[in-house]
Amino acid sequence: AQKVTQAQTEISVVEKEDVTLDCVYETRDTTYYLFWYKQPPSGELVFLIRRNSFDEQNEISGRYSWNFQKSTSSFNFTITASQVVDSAVYFCALTSGSARQLTFGSGTQLTVLP
Amino acid sequence: DAGVIQSPRHEVTEMGQEVTLRCKPISGHNSLFWYRQTMMRGLELLIYFNNNVPIDDSGMPEDRFSAKMPNASFSTLKIQPSEPRDSAVYFCASTQTGGRVEQYFGPGTRLTVT
Image (cartoon, rainbow over all chains, first blue to last red; front, side):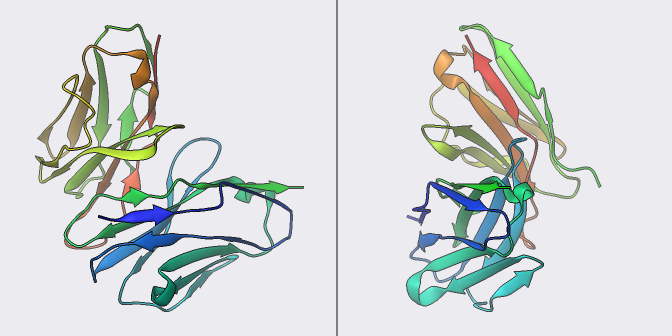
């Protein structure tokens, strides 16, 4: 069985603050993939990043960065200098072994105030 | 390139009526997924197809739900008869197996059953 936990239900920050969204996962497979998706108020699900279990290198894309740590089964997402447009629900997800279906966390509602 | 296309975007129907949701995956993708999103249960997988064949339908809530994929470019999710508790946003997603594993989601169909 696999599980994704996003303990932060809601986070509110003021524009230009940095914010980190936590994601903890569980799987018995040694090969797995982790993802982050963004769901803005318009409702669509937007793919942000994929990480495989063999690549623990952290990644930075503009104001976004991801910290993958197998030792703590975490895949955290940091937004630097947040903007109002970053306001959305962010989902962490996992697929492992031969499975193709995504297991989603419950999501974190991020609100960035002007 | 066109993304995943879903229709209709909104559907309002009365309890007992048949509802058919439609999805066109991204060209070249050979796996297709149907998800349902509700406040209570979050994002949950209903069924997924690989090369037009249903692989896992364990998430289909009951016999009132059925899904088909007659060819690589079209899938339907049918609810008959519909009930108020079926009200949710239904997402279709597609991906390529054997390569990148991130799923790309359609805009969703917001279903309201009164």
